Image (tube, rainbow, N blue to C red; front, top):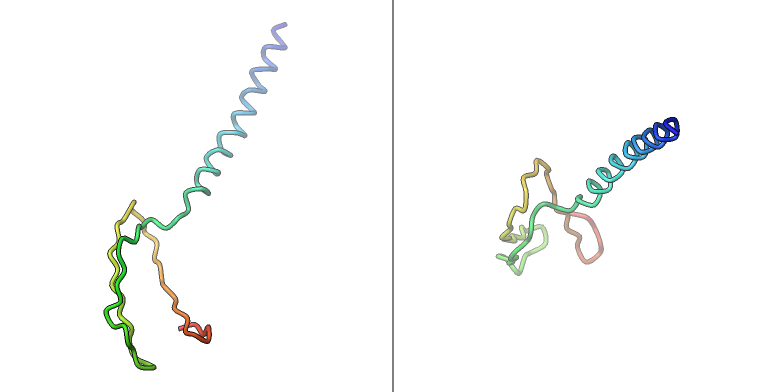
Amino acid sequence: MSLRVIGYACLGVICAGILIPLALICWWLADRHIPVDVLKTEVVTPIVKPGGKLIIRQTIRYTRDCRGHVDRVMYDSATHRK
């Protein structure tokens, strides 16, 4: 009888050792969104000559501290990356 109790206790420890890291990994994977909310976007220069500079002003709110760096990429009407 005591051997069965020890076996169930070991099985519980092994299952907890598997399920707890899996739960932490799932939480980490689900929390991979960008840590900012874009509140407002306005185009300062709506008409730009070819080769000119387009200026966009955005108001953002940081939802958490992040050391990441985000670059934005723009494509023209012919889907060329700028």
